[in-house]
Image 1 (cartoon, rainbow, N blue to C red):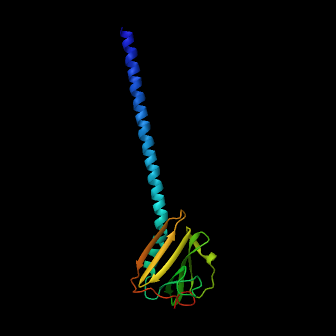
Image 2 (cartoon, rainbow, N blue to C red):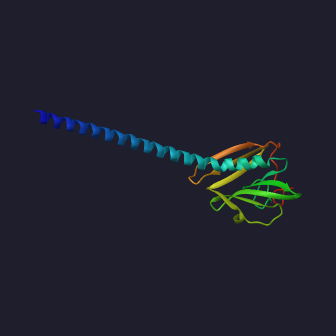
Image 3 (cartoon, rainbow, N blue to C red):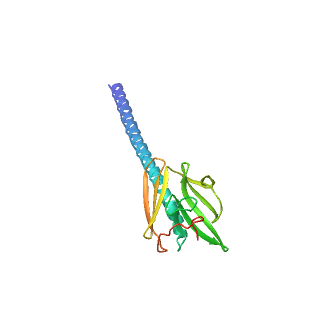
Length: 172
């Protein structure tokens, strides 16, 4: 009779261990699934917000009277697809262009009167589009990320207004 009792005790312990192992495995799989969903959500959020926050930081750094304009890439027309940020260094005018070209948001820092083309800019972030509009002292940035999500951000310019483009690179 004692021998049978030991076999039942052993089977009971083995059954408890099996149940414990299955529970641990279920908790691990649930945690891994949750972690994967959180990681995907964070990645999508990063991708959506990075472009507009990048532009916002650049605008905040350059926001002074006459230094923020929206124009075409050459700076020849009011409104357009390129943001111009003017700055003066040692008496010389320079311009940072931020624009979308060939699947990327690009940035190009040059002398204000330099002849450049869109492919000359540094690739900043992969995207599907970037556009700007300026009116009533506000700049609206609209970016489309790689996944097609559209994010807009409107900035109130501290310098007091949205400035029209000026011929010759968007600077005066």
